[in-house]
Length: 193
Image 1 (cartoon, rainbow, N blue to C red):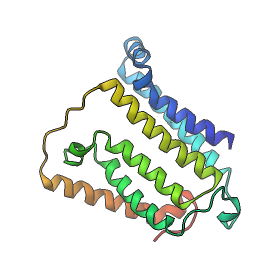
Image 2 (cartoon, helix red, strand yellow):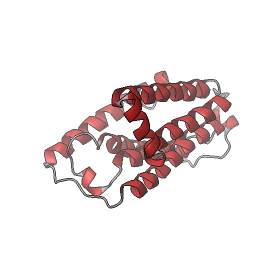
Image 3 (cartoon, one colour):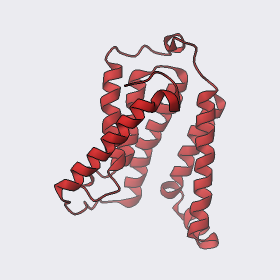
């Protein structure tokens, strides 16, 4: 469990640097250059992902999963998770192409991350799930607060053609379906389709 906790905390701290330690980031970029700084941050994120994934796998629960549950998930939790995670995938893809979802919310990717985490918490009540999905959901919500505080007033992007929204949502749904189909191979658990 320690490795998983450290991985989630490390992930969070790395991502907090631009919003909590902007002067440190600026000093590192000035001293080493933008690309070396980004390379170092990327390397640190890979380390945090390694800690998260290896920590998660080291805590493989006994079957059935309910024996390791900290809380009992609701009967409808799996269905709610499927919907929240689908919305999370759509929101996670929203920052990249010009689209109108970015006009409705300031931080669609972070909100998508929070939806993904909340969805998993409705479907799995184990300690490792609480650490991973609860921890990353809390990180995403704190990150939203910190970025809003740092950046001040939000200026909405320009209106985009509706076809951009359709294309982006269709892509997100395809990625979501691919993850559903391969979830058991990539992350364990049962095949969801």
